Every structure is written in C-alpha cells, then in structure tokens.
Image 1 (cartoon, rainbow, N blue to C red):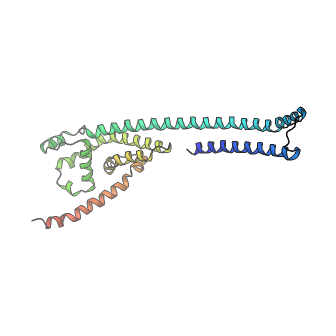
Image 2: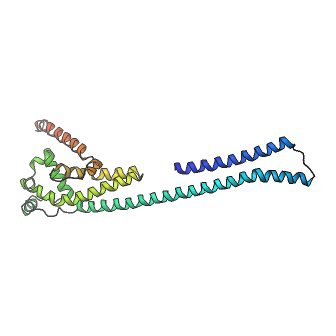
Image 3: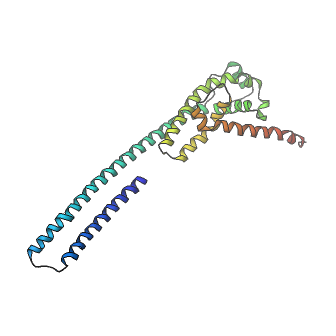
Length: 250
C-alpha cells in the first residue's frame, strides 16, 4: 500500500509540475510580447519556435519521467506478487503441518508399552494422543486430579511420551519455523496467532516433560515457559482450595 501511494504521489507531482511549467512559459511569452493575435505567419512561426524550443523539451522530459514511474510501478507490482505468492506457499505449508499434527493428536497413542496398554484397557482409559499428553502433562505439573491416576500411567508414561513426542516435536519445530517466515513476510497476524494458540498447550505438555526438547524457536513461538508457569500457578491454586471444598462437603 505505501508503495502504491508513493507512485500515485509521484505521478500527481509530475503532472502538476508540467502544467505549472507550461503556464509559466506561456505567461512569460505573453508578458514579453503581448497577447494580441497576429495575422502575420512569421509571428506565428516565431511563437511555434518558442513553444517547440521550451515546452517541447519540457514535454519530452515529462514523458521520460512518466516512463521511469511506469517502470517503478511495474517493479513494485512484481515484488508484491512475489511476496503474496511466498505468503500463499507458507500458508499451504502451515495448513499441511497443522493437518499432520491434528492427525497424530486425534489418533490413539502409538507404541504404548504392553504394561501400560493393559492397565489402560483395565481402567477403560480410551484416549487420543492429545488426551494422553494432557494427562501425563498434568501429572508432571502436579494437577490435583492427577493424584488418583492409575500407577501404570505414571510408571510407564515416560517411554510412551518419548515414542510419540519426537514425532510431534518435529512437526511443532517445523510449524514454528513456518510461522517465523510467515511473519517476516508480513503475513496475517491473526492467522499466526491462531496457530500459536492452537498448539501452545501441546507444546507445553511436551516441553514440561524435560526429556524431550523443543527448539528454542518453538519455545519462543508457543511461549511454553510462560504457559508452564501459568499452569503451575493454576494447579497450585486448585490444590490449596481443595481441602476447603472437602471440608464443606457433607
């Protein structure tokens, strides 16, 4: 948008300058030789020479400036199209990475250890990968509801998280890289915010496990450190209020 405004301003200035110069040249001629219409062809010939020698050169210069402005506008339009094409490609890559993440998170956790799978079946703990990560993340951060989670989930969750975590971390790192490139390309801030918010908790559950390591860019992009602090404060508040709630229960 600023480039278009600059080009429009340049064209307006060039037109105004040309008109002003034309008026000035005609006024100078009229003030010097008068404004009476002559019937002599020689007088008109002299006037024609004057116009050709002054305004002709001015119009030629104005035409040259117009060509330069046209070239500049075309160059700006080409750069704008290239930037838009780059943003569109990044948006497609973001959507593809997001689709891969959603597929992993919606499915059942792969490579679950036999002991944990048997316990999950006994406890009827049928969960998607997202629910599984949320559960083990809450265990790690001390959520009060996680205290009663069956022992096998606590004992074998590290191995299970590692089996799926590395795959998710690769996708999250790629998503963070795409988001940085998208923002550098002046992509929509609203779209970038949607992706960051959508996967912030997933990145936080993985990051809080400690054995898995997101890239520094992913940690900054999804603000996992800040989210972990906020969750710990919320869980601590729940733990503090829990005894009071139990005391008021008949």
